[in-house]
Each structure stands twice: as C-alpha cells, then as structure tokens.
Length: 175
Image 1 (cartoon, rainbow, N blue to C red):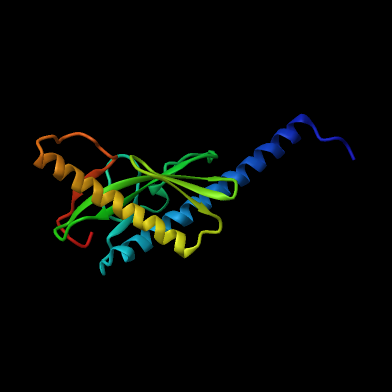
Image 2 (spheres, rainbow, N blue to C red; image 1 turned 90 degrees about the vertical axis):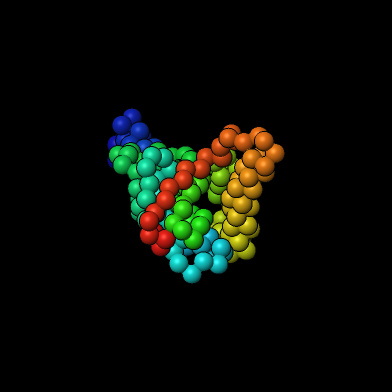
C-alpha cells in the first residue's frame, strides 16, 4: 500500500474539521431550539412567545429555521462561535424584542453569551436544571433592561446603554 500524498493528509484534516464544525452546529442548534421552546414555557405564556430569528437584519416573529443562525448560507461551515437570535414577545399588544446569543463548544462545555449581557456555560450533555438556570438569567436580562431604562428616564438620564436589542411590533399579538 502506498503512502498517503500530501493532498490525502490535507483532505483528511479538512474532513476532521468539517465533522467538528457539523458537531458544533448541531450542538448549538439543539440548544437554540431548547431555549426557544423552553423559555416561552418559563415565562408562563400559553401562546407561542419565542421564535428563532436571524441575529442581524430585519426579522419577523416566526421561526426562521436554519436562517436563524449566523452560519446560514455559508458553503463551508466554519468552526467557532455561532450567533442566533431569539424574538421574545414582551407585551400583550404584539411588541417583540430580539436577543442575540452566541454559542460554541469549548471542551466538555457549550458556552453561551448573551450579547450585551452575561456568559453562561452548559456542561454537556445539557440537563434541565441548568437550562432553567439559564432561563432565569435570560429573564433577568430582559427585565433589567426595561427597568434600567425606565429608571434612567425617571432620573433624567436615558437614551443609551443599548444591550443588543431590536424592537418590532406585530399587529397580530400571536406572531
């Protein structure tokens, strides 16, 4: 049997990278879907109140599937942090806010950063208790943002401190 060529070695390395990038994407996407489903339940809302949306650009409160991830449309899936957005309904009248999260596998952990907020690590495999801890942090992030801005307004200092949120209104309160 002949020795592998340099190209064979390069192709094997690229294949290993590709498998790792697919694994990373699958882990991030699974977490994103768990967050999208579970956070609405955590909020106690009976209607669909959280959707996966693109992390940048215009969005509508609806599931965007693979389009909700920063790697969407890339021919060669990069290995590293993947961003995704969550559209969260924040009123009974159809107001939504987008939270952007960034996640990537680091050794035995899946690290998640709330853009403009805290970082959080999940030990793999992700357990329900740890997911609930993350939902609490996400809830606090949202309520703190609204309360801080209202407090700043009441005290005469407001208009700054953007935490990465984008607002939109849907005429239909359901989505």
